Length: 421
Image (cartoon, rainbow, N blue to C red; front, side, top):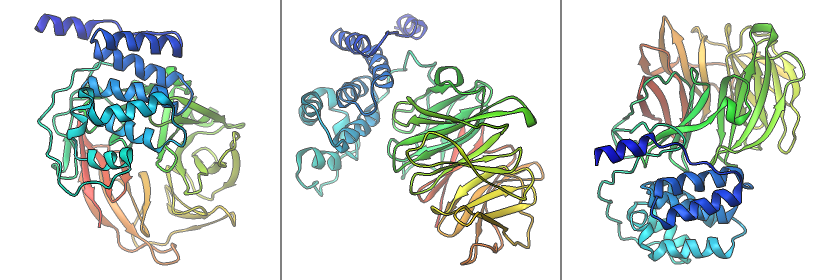
């Protein structure tokens, strides 16, 4: 048994040439009961296919269920239910999820009753669904060596999630509430990895080489409304840097768009406004770039009178906040104006910045340590109230806002959560 497992983990990744080949090989793997290869090939078919292809998503949902990833399958079935156009295969797959033994574990998950109501058109039952027995998923073979999580981060779980991430140099963090996954940047390996809260796997998501990024991934953010991941990458050093903004399909990591700067720039931050406009921050000229919704070209918006900007966050469609070495700046991109945020405290050296309910939340480097701080602002957004330290970490930390929770990497292999009031 041990020998068989070792041979499985050492097996070469499954490969396929195009969507029909990936799909055909995936179905053949399912027929012979090789569910890890089935999942691998189904995932590759989704990555190479057109965005939101219902047939490929339906195949992937079944592969996720059979390969020990019931949480992933639940999410994928939900995405299928939300698609405006369905096919016979996707409709049949959704119906199969209601009764087939392939989806037995999926139907035990707490979120199943809500999804079942959407699939059948019947109101969800008020009877609580029993929690499933612990399931030990098989290790994924193709995308990377697996890193098993020891603690899931569910609403009722402990405040920490631990995982074995030997060699992972964390840079940047985002949380996808829909699929209950974390995206973490790995500076050393120049890639993004995904930590799944349900299946307890950590796998490679995309790398600089596979996605066409420049070699350094400097920042990324999730557009939860549209299911997109926005990444900025940089080539070169200091004033000679070139930068690009990349749009990826969040569910698959498939590259959808790339927009490069037409002048030297080192993009170090990215944020998305509610209307879908993307703003990126350049640290060379303290400049803000913009990609309007539906556009394919980055346009310069304005320069700031602020040295060494490090992070930005959107408060709404019009107002951004930028962190720089002299403090925080409120930027009105409609009026092309910028004003410093007044504070009785030194508010500098922010590694990341988020906006929530009239306050800025971020990671601030102070005396060699990282502080997770909340800074409430006045009604005009121009004066900071005394900052509130939510947590502290002795080393470099990355963090991200996810709804009413702030997540941060407290130490190698540890993500902690802070419930915000």
